[in-house]
Image (cartoon, rainbow, N blue to C red):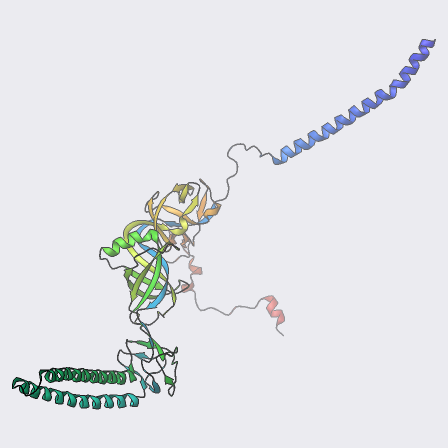
Length: 446
C-alpha cells in the first residue's frame, strides 16, 4: 500500500514537467516552420526565375550611327599663348626742356620718322651758336700759332733763335689743335641736342594714351614717359608646348618646312589670325616642362592685340586618305579604346580599335575597323555586346528617315507604295467650297 502511494506521488510530481517539455517542443517546431516558410519566400522572390526556351526578347535600343570613312586628318598641337609685339617703345625725352607741342592723336597709327613731340629748342640753339663762335676764336689762335712756328723754324736754321723756343712753339700749336677739336665736338653736341628737341617715331606702330601734356618741363630723369608706341604689323604670339611635342616640331622646323599657326580667342571659339612659326626657344622650362615658341602674324585686320591671351594651334602635318571615325564613337573601358559595330542583323559587337591623331570631331583609326563599317555614335552607354539596336532616323543615313509612304515626294516612293486616291490629290481638287457649319456652330448663330 505504501509503495502504491509513493508511486502515485512520484507520477503526480513528474507529470507537469513532461507536459512542459512537450509544450516547449511544440513551440520550437512552430518557430522552425515559420523560419522555413520565410526562407522559402525570400528565395522565391530573389532567385531568378528559370526561363523555358528563348523567352521574350528585349526591345531594340534606339542609337545614333555613322559610317567609318576615308579622309584627311590634321595633326594639330595646341598651346596657350600671349600676343607679343615685336617692338614696344617707351618714348622719353633725352634732354631737359619744356614740351611745347605734340604731333599725334591718341591711338593713331604713325609711321617710322613721323613727328611726335617738340621740346623748346631755343636754349640748345643758343648753345650751338656759342660753340660755333668759340670754334672760330680757337681756330684763329691755331692759325697764329702755326704762323709763329714757321718763323721760329726759319730763324732757328740761321741761329737767330734758340731751339727750345721753336720746340715750345710746336707744343703750343698742338694745344690749339686740341682746343679746336673740343670746339667742334661741342658743336656736334649742340646739334644733337637740337635733334633731340624734335622727337620722331622710332618704329611704325600705334601710339597709346598721351602721358604728358604740353607745357610741362621734361627731364631725362623723369619716370613718366611721353607715350608708349607699339608695333602691330607684323606682330607675334609667344606660346608654349609640352616638351614631349618639341622633337616632332623641331624635326619639321629644322627641315625648312613652314609650319602654320592659327590663333584663336581666349575661349577658343573664333579664329582671329593665321601666321607661321618663326622661332623655337633654346631651352626647356624646368618648372613647367614646356618650351616657348614664337609665331609671326601679319595682323592686317589688327585683331591681335598686345598682351592678349590666345590659343595657338600649330599644324604639324596633314595625314591624307586615312581611315577616320567620329570622335563620339570611341568608347574607353577595360580592353582600351573600342567601338560598337552594327552588324547587318542590327546587333552590335564590341570591336577594339587603335586610334591615332584627333582632329576636331573626328579621329584617325589605325586598326580595328575599316571604311564602310557602321558604328554607334549615340546611346552607347546603354549597350552591351550582342544587343539589338535600332538606328534613329535623325542620326542615321538620310535614307533611314526617308518618307517612303504613298504621300512621299516623287523619287522616294518604293515600288510597292500604293498610289494616292485621285479624290485625295490636292492638285486635282476643285476650288474649295465654304465649309458648312456644324450643328453646334449653327446653334450659336442667332
